[in-house]
Length: 291
Length: 310
Image (cartoon, rainbow over all chains, first blue to last red; front, side, top):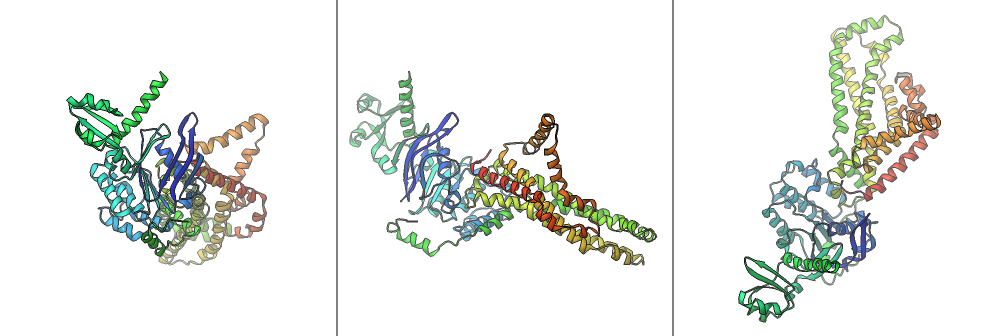
């Protein structure tokens, strides 16, 4: 069964189109990165999935309609919207009491175990914790819930690199198993590249790219070309070309690896570079069409 | 729920073994109400502080108590009542006024604060329906505050009585006049009735309106709650030269005929005779008010579904 299934998902705010007919299917056991520029519709898409906003089109999350069945859905879905949503007056012990009181799948001992690994005091209020500690607390609460779908919208926004690393490490080591699904959006794309199983690019309310990481690795290659081979390499029709420190870097879709190795260094492209190549190209084409 | 259990046998087995217990709506309401008390500690701190301040003042006033009792004994029973019982009534009125103010400010912030600090996203990530959330917030002014006020008032009045007895006995005076004029039990019944009937039921549409505005307004909830009511009153005055709307509001705030009777008699010893629960329970004003309150709360529930952080 698909965890999330959307067909023709649309959402408009007065004059702007936030989601322009999205079709997507997220299977159980995947970790999907939803990547897009600001205003591309990421948060709107997640809000629709979480039942926080009404929408047009068809959307099923774990077989339920999120807008009409949000409270039941939240038995099986967890989300971290961003680091700043835990109320500042809440004590750590109260947070544990409350979630244990209302959530049937919350394992308090597990949450206590996660917190024991941090320096968070039970009697502290959220306002007394650092940003990183608040994220740790929220993650401890969420990871102790035996949910089937976890949605993370910029979960590490504003955290330093140590916390960010720790965040994804504990998510992978202590939480993820193949019966759960995780959807994550972030701007720090490179940091989650090896966490993801699938990647989706969203731009202007549309899914413009959807690919598993395995496919991505076998299909796309990035060539740092030796200057003398540049002309030869260009003949192979790179989808994108950029220059770094005077050296040309070419991105190829489905080129022969053996051939490329002869022209320079070959590696798997970063998601960010691929994103620029795909979304940037489309923007260029759109501009070309308009002019 | 059909999971492809053949693909992941061990984990689905584990989740079957650790079958999650179900949590009833009542439990969720209980924890949501506790959450409100954690967040808005003024619900009990404000009346406790006022009670403490009042007791402090009363303690100082007991210096004059022996003398006052002596003069009181020479007076008529009505005047004796004035001197002996008045401070107890005053304590009750002061605490009621305090909780009314607390209730108004609580309601105006209840559905606004969670959007302002974005915590609504956290609360909505938990399996608690908007209905339970709004009911838990409405229960604070309708149930929790009246009962808390009753308890705090009772304790305050008993402490006053004990202080008076200690002072009188210490001065070698009789406490008999105190006993004969004070009937704390009767006062308690009157107070509880007043709190539940007027603060809990009669004022319900006021709290419902305030909660609705707090769930709707993006800012300045207080103004949005007050100005439209004033505007309607003014427009009616100018257009038709009548004041039905203003009279209706005034009647609601006065506490209707029931509340007015209780306030007028100053909850004296005789006021129990004036309590007429039957008359109150069959008065159309009560039921219209409750229907309006229910409509406001239903609108607030629906609104919360659409609302996100501001």
